[in-house]
Structure formats: C-alpha cells, structure tokens
Length: 504
Image (cartoon, rainbow, N blue to C red; front, side, top):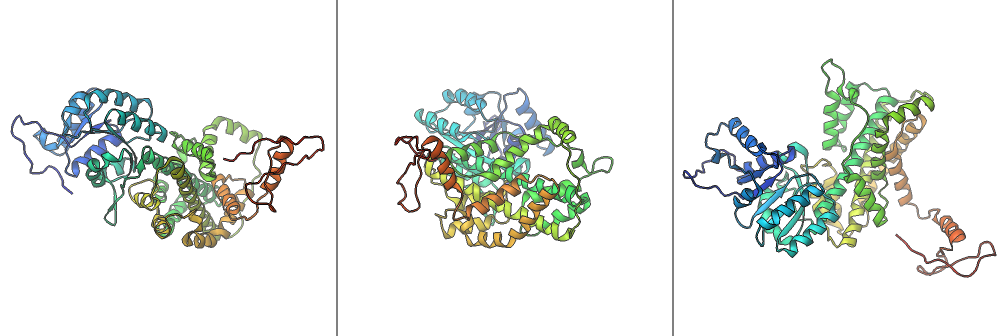
C-alpha cells in the first residue's frame, strides 16, 4: 500500500488527472476519499455545498503539512463538469449521497457530461429495485452503473470496508483494482467481490443491514436480561461482554458493546443509561422484511427487530402504559452464573438463526431475480470491515464451499452441533424473560422458527381446512399426490365450486 506524501511530482501548471471522482463529502465520503488516496490513487472530490471540497482539501494539507496541493493527490472541484473533466477515461464517478431522489438528481446531471463506457457508482444504501432501474436506464445511454453496498462506518470507510458491488459487469474490470485495494482484508483476501448483475450488490447490502438490525436487537435483549433481570452492574456487564468477545460470540458488535459499557459520562456515571430508549432507523431493515414477505420466506427474527425499534419509538405511549398496566415485580433467585451462560447461549443460537434466515432469503432472491449469488463469497466479504463481522462467518463460508446448493445453513454440521449445544440455555433465557416480564421478541421468535423448521408436521392442516370451510380455497391430502387439490362441502349447504388455490 502506498502512503502519501509520495515522491510523485508535477511540473508547474501541469494538470493532475484523477483515477476516480467522488461526490459527497459527509462522514463516509471524506473517509473514503482518504482511503482511496492512501492506496496510491488520485481522487477528485465534489460536494454540492459550496466551499466544502476546498475546505476538506485545505484541512488535509495542513494536517499532513503539505505545501504543494498537488502532492495531496486530492483534487477539489467546484462543479460536476470540473469533476468529470478531471478524470481519466473511462471516467469513474463514485457517489456517496443519500439514497432516493438525490441519486437520480446526480445521475441526471452527470449523463450529459459523460461519454460511452464511463461508469457511475452508487455507494449509498439504495433500494435494489431502484438500482435495477438505474442499470437499465444508463445501459440504454451507453453508460455503466454499479450499485455497491458499503459497510463499516467511519472507520471502515477510511481503513477498509466491506464492499458489495453489483450492476453492469462490464464496469467491474475498471473499478476492481480501486475497490479491492481500499476494502478490508482478511487473511490477505479483499472483502470485495463482484456480487451479481443489476441490483444484486444493493440487495446483499440490504440483507446485511437486516441481519445487523437482528444482531443489535439480540444484544439489547441480552443486556436487559442481564441488567434488569439479574441485576448486573455496568462493570459486571463489561466483564461479561469482554469474556463473550473472546469466545464463539466474538464479533464487532459485541466488541463495541463492551466499550459502551465501559464509557462513563462527565459525572462518572454510565453514559448508556442517560441515552433515551428510542431507536431510529433508515429503512433497510424494513425493506428486508417487506422483501421476505414478497418472496414468502420466514424472516421472523429480523422482522421482530424492526418492530422492536418501532415500539421503542412510542416512548410517551409506553410511559402511560407502564402506569396503567404495571408489571408484577419478580426477583431472580437462581444461579446467576449459570443464567449468564444461558443468556450467552441464547444470544449465540439466535444470532445463528438470524444469519440462516438471511442467507435463506438471499437464496430465494437469487432464483427470483436471477442474481446468481455466491454465498461463500458473501460470507467472505462480511468477515472484515462490516458491522456484522463475526467469528462464525468462516464456518458459513466453509458450509457453502462444501455444498453451494445448501438449502438452509441450519442443515450444515456446524449449525446442527451449535444448536444442539446451545438449545437448553436458549430455552432457559426465554423462560426467564417470560417469568420476569422482560420482552425478548428476537430470542423468542428465533426459537419458534427453529422449532417450526424442524417440525415434520405443523398445524397448517387445520388452517387449510378453515380456509376451505369459509372460502372454498381447497386443500391437498396426505393420502394423495402433491399438486392435487380437494374441496369439501363442510356445511352441506355449499356447492361444488371452489376458489383458485395459490401459494406465496
């Protein structure tokens, strides 16, 4: 990796040509610009707000004590035309802007400035269907479009993120050297591989964020069981999470949670306890849940994680309900150390369920949208840089290396053994929540999914009888071949007509 300032010099008046242009200099954009520069590439930057690009370059030059602006290898531009004119062909314009109309705004402005074969990259959290539309639109104009999920936050953007590109594959050869260079590395492998055509990259990032929602809610439920249920102090919480991060639960989110419990406010009290218990969201978790419903895939844990954020937002209503519907106070009297281990088992098992559900959704999406996703590569990309990086992602990669057509991760030997080991503690943790009136929606829904998935027989036979009774929706029989449908005149007053059956 090249570090700057370097020994490359330009003659006086010589115009520096950039390898890539970047639009958007908020937290992610600024740090990505530095990351690109630090890896030996020249980057031109533009921000719609006047003066931001100049300020960014000037500050960086002062920090690095660089007198010649060209040696910074970051070109400040003051218009999109100036940005485009500063790029070598084929031009690569990398947008780090808010998802939605803003992306289309910049595309509209860029189209007349670009030439055939040039490339626009959207690195925001765009909805994958929007990316599908943009790929098709730009393809008609002879331009290439890439929708790329970027995960890792501020630190990842500067020092190596997980990057999930998809779109027009013709553009990959051009951008691959840059994006793989600036991505995180695990065992020397870049956490950036081509995901698939059209909106595949943004689809995988959407599911990544859905799993992130689930992981965070699971940790929060463990926190409430430990603090409110078992009465652990913040110092004790710190020690528990520090220990968890050294074992099978090791992950980025467990690591930062450990740091959060250690952080004190100016008065010496735990800062986290002064933060209002209302959670925000930007929509990717919701999109994941909606898409799962569209495809008929039970994504129960992530759905509950989204709903938990929605419930948290009803703060004032919850305060009124707490006074009107008071909980019965029950104190825990059992073996505290054993219950801490049980909660850890629940967190681990439910976390595995979240990933299993997420990968099952991607499997269905790959068929439905013709993405041809490589699940092992996705696990590889998630091992470093991203928010949901976890120790067991190696196990997921190995599972798909063994069987690329694996129906569900729960059928892999690693998952089978892990579930068997954690199941007893998992159930104890859920029971504890029930007994102490502590909500555990993701712990509980994950367990219900696990029990349902491994049930040879579910009560849907009765459900189909009910549907046939009131709506003549028909049913299949256990003593007849699949695909043959029947209707019963349950009341003796109906006719022979039946409704068309359907599945989702």
